[in-house]
Image 1 (spheres, helix red, strand yellow):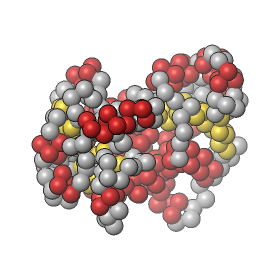
Image 2 (spheres, one colour):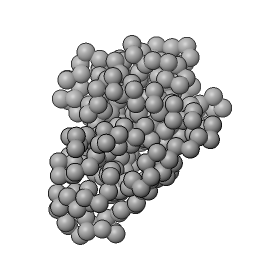
Image 3 (tube, helix red, strand yellow):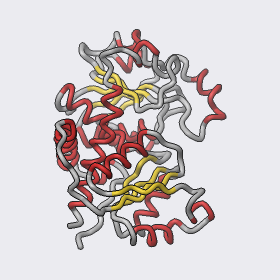
Image 4 (spheres, helix red, strand yellow):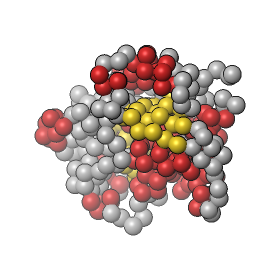
Length: 304
């Protein structure tokens, strides 16, 4: 049996492998739209462990596994021994002995790392407080579908230096683009991560300056899951950091904007942009399904 591969951050795959994954996601999407039977993994089982609530992650993984001919099971802390304090290492050994893939959506990134270290099957990070790599696959797929390669382009992140922002830092390295991060002081991403990617990443506290000439603008909610008590404080701090028509007027001609959803219209993004007929945000959301199918296919094939 080959060594078990995991997908905990974008750095777990080489740039060439990530490019292949995006290409395969687009192929799978096209075939799915054409009505092709994609049930190439009958009997395979995906365990989905959720410590955080979810819409897109659950629906995309569950639907994707069904379309590949397998089955996905939903596991929450309320329904499993993980919620009663069973060590992550023990749960990893047991769960991985009965399934073919594990997807985890949780808080600390160390949880997915510890689970993967003791899992006999591939583990996928469905979101942690530090990274959200599956969303980046969908975002890059969306860009490629609409604009071609993102290499050499300029991307502007507007908002909190959160897990999505940090995944965009990894993406800048792996997909070879420039990233400008517009955030209020005190809300910057991990300093070491920024320093390690200084050749491609810079922080700019003025959002209009950061957006100047950008090919892609990306944002996310101001208060992520677990930060609801900080909502008012964050609303004040981020008041200037809305993606709206004024900000987009500073970008390059034909620039796209994205949001990983759920969105708060009138906060991090204007209702005008959210509801614009030409937005790619809904393509971006749907592409979670196709990108993750390509990812699961890749991980399952690697074990044959």
